[in-house]
Image 1 (cartoon, rainbow, N blue to C red):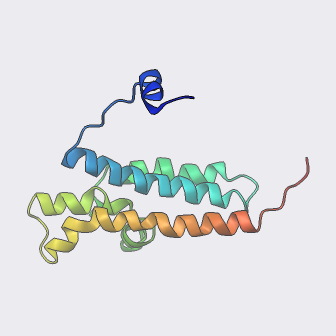
Image 2 (image 1 turned 135 degrees about the vertical axis):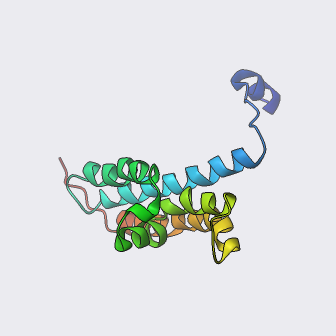
Amino acid sequence: MIELRDIRKTFRVAKRKKGAGAAFRSLFRREYEGGFILGAAVCFFTVDGLEFINIFTDGGRELASYPLPIYGKWIRRFFTFIIPFGCMNYLPLMYLTGRAMQHQVLYMITPLLGILFIFPCLLVWKLGVRHYASTGS
């Protein structure tokens, strides 16, 4: 019989660092995973879904490297409310630097709101799995 302590010895599970930085990385990782789940779900409905995934992963990374106000109004709204990449870096940074004029608490909790993005992604994934039909090749 294999005991839990034997498994721990075998795999030597590393202890994770705790703190605000680790929590923030975890939140960001969940939002990024949501983008991958959404992209993978789109592959159920398209022939070449890899390019769609690249738009949001690589494009989201590039978008997040610049401040949101340099983009047009519709791009800011899309990447704040639909695919919330702006909720992970720009809006919390505005709060931390004291530049959030109104709704300061909202700016502070946007990473937590961004994690809600994973739920619609999982729904699209379930929809894709439900309607999947193999090509047989």
